[in-house]
Length: 248
Length: 302
Image (cartoon, rainbow over all chains, first blue to last red; front, side, top):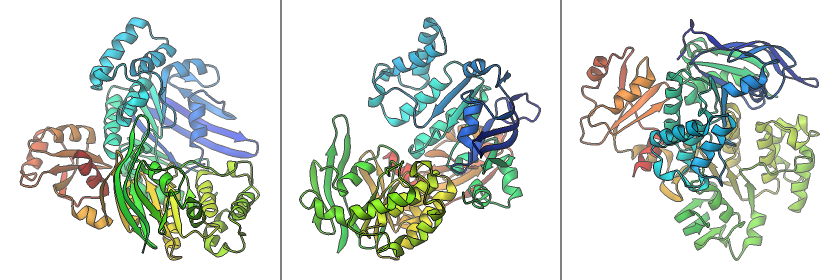
């Protein structure tokens, strides 16, 4: 939920990232509020992945100041990593480990203790209605379950922020919606959600949406406001109006 | 004559039944879409049609040629764009195109007409290595390479997956133009909104075709009464709607929720009142026509 008065959980000031002469991120400025669902949209090659890598502490900016979860991107990258969760469509769970082993693996990486892991794992199995699947290999469970499990594992350590990089690509329409139910719930519990997607109906579910074009943030506001500013019926129209101008 | 004829195809892998009794036909010059999520069996089906794997059961023909017996001949007749980018990353745009033309015993010049509209968009980058192109440009190059031998049937496996909304739109505009060249096009996509751009579609899930028809017929066959409901708080709205008596399904659709009632059930009477009592503000409730995604989800329930 977006509350203008809420504390900033991400603050980005004048973020620039260059690769040689190519400017991938060109003076990005934005803030994300605690508990907000923040949609980070843009055409392929607009610079989204570059920015996300920096926000996750995986890459340094060329210049600019960034604070993520209360930590400085230059001096406190390891603290940032401990306080965020990450999930992408491409890589999430280990196929040849069981459901429980995956949970234990991820929770272990974040330094959770064995007893805590046991407890969270069994709570999770109940919550996801997956008790009978505990010892099944990931490759043998349905895609919808994998999807929910991947998200739950990404927030198993109660991070302040979870980054979701195209989490619903290729997923069936029912599972896609169930996934958003989980996102809404996490946001209600105070976890900030930073999400990219190519499904424009999902952009409507975000509290605020930023749209990147050619390395710059071309627009940032609530879906309602963006639609009224651009005289559009849907976020799809807004996106097409903004992103169509450019040809690489 | 139909371009593609498939009868009772089945395919198993060790752990899964990928295709289960699939039958359909695609007419010459038709733009035919397979709409379904990952794991539905689209890629397995396309690999059978492109003679890369053999079905366990059933018969499939392309231009009247059998996919098992006549595979060599079929390979000359079809263009295939696999789901995963499979051009040579360390060859340039131009080199990739020449390579594909040469493999099929032709030249770029000979069939340039067919690809001109698409190629001009990537021509400024013809010296760039294919691996360094953006997603949208890779996809355009892959389409050029699949077309350069002037195939009569074009098979595209999820050409728009992971591609942004603008490039998706442009891609479909290209496909529409190609249809005018009398090429039969079979395309797979997980994006439900792309269904309406096809002449006919098959909705596929778990290795089975749930329905085959024109997009408008599919939507017409939707059996329930459907309402679009908006309120200022979509999350609570979804939860409250799910508790409404006799409700059949509740799904989020962008800024609204779609609520369905089975035929003969209470059709949303009292919904307004119920939601007001729950404290919703900014309420609007209006009947709405089912789109392909509504239909897909309804068919999944069966």
